[in-house]
Length: 477
Ligand SMILES: O=C(NCCCOc1c(-c2ccc(O)c(O)c2)oc2cc(O)cc(O)c2c1=O)[C@@H]1CCCN1C(=O)/C=C/c1ccc(O)c(O)c1
Ligand SMILES: [Ca+2]
Image 1 (cartoon, helix red, strand yellow):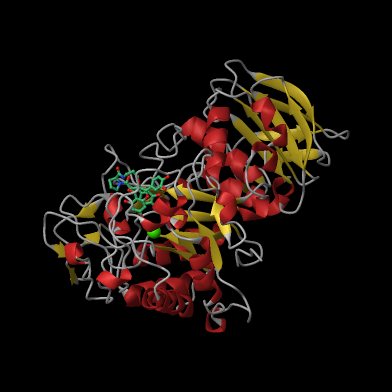
Image 2 (tube, rainbow, N blue to C red; image 1 turned 180 degrees about the vertical axis):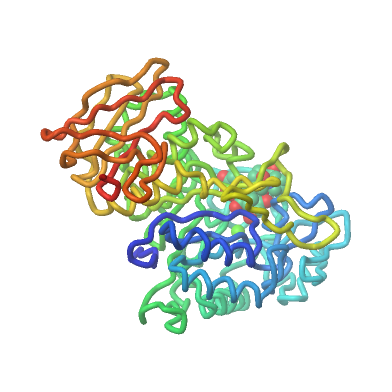
């Protein structure tokens, strides 16, 4: 089964990219739990190589399975899991089991001071040696499934998951993390490992820890990074029996829609019909840590750098029932390799500075933006209902209801939207949640009136700050 293991009444995962464990624990208690977020994808916890320029992707070159990175140490990790579980927010660990480091021109030292000698495949802190790796061939033909699994991705030394010692070492690492109280894993570079080997590993994972509030018999939620835009030799459908897969087409298509490249009217049947995996098998997102800074999936997905369209894309994702949504919370970057704000002398990511509710000094904190966190509330309220009352203007103005619990409209035309639209909501005055909140019975943003026949006066000026209006039954006055 593919249960996220979220606490009932919580929904939506946020990837707190490069955040430190102590800051995450604090954010669980002061924001994420209260807003009803379901879970957090944390950056890799396993020791990684120190690359002099500290690119973000150094965390994807493991040196060992010790829980020592610039985000913190084992004690801080355990404390974070404890505090977040208590706040009703689950933790998902981004784990790299396909490979270790590449060869480098400098001595290889890890973030936990372990050493390794990649050319001789000696990773003494695990330990791994040459017999645990595939022969070093490079992936040159992505249409050859054998190469993609058994050769090296950009020179990263490729572990042989059919080797008994490798399997047992990975299984032990993952089971230790499960015992610390996490709810599941992101499997990095899953496309580069054989489904049968992954199945062997997953089947030997323990149930979630009853000492951390999980009911007995709960299985870890496994979502696998499989970058498949179609056209390669390997398909995401080879993996979605084992667990959930990242559906890269999702963010690509919604970005095209909100950019006006593809008319929003086509999104009436958005979902499996668009060649995406079944909804329960799809981990969906607009942008991720990789394609927000490069276009590795071949498309130019929306990011925080284009805020109006990005917020519309996120709002659509959180309002629509297809898939399991994940948002990213980023750090500002100017070049695609740049790592997080950090004190380069100290071997840690710099402390997060959150002033007056929004992050500063290089941390974007999309998860705190009102237009995004209020849509988490919307998604929780409409859970279990279907899309109905779809309306469009034949191009880039759309609206739909979610049962009789919520209603949302988008305008990405160059002219205003000003219509009486039918909803399935009962009549009354609703606080509009993209422009504001309902506080002590008052709306801090716009209000929307729904008449006794369910018709709402919907107005979205083309030059408005936000191109979305959304209401739901929890914010009727
Ligand atoms: O130009 C680069 N890489 C080549 C193009 C991206 O290829 C990579 C893919 C990749 C990309 C597209 C695919 O269709 C595919 O099957 C694999 O997955 C990775 C996964 C890792 O754990 C570590 C990596 O270094 C990579 C990687 O380099 C730069 C310099 C090295 C790291 N890197 C990067 O750009 C790092 C990218 C990266 C890192 C971690 C990820 O989880 C990821 O998805 C991408
Ligand atoms: Ca491999």
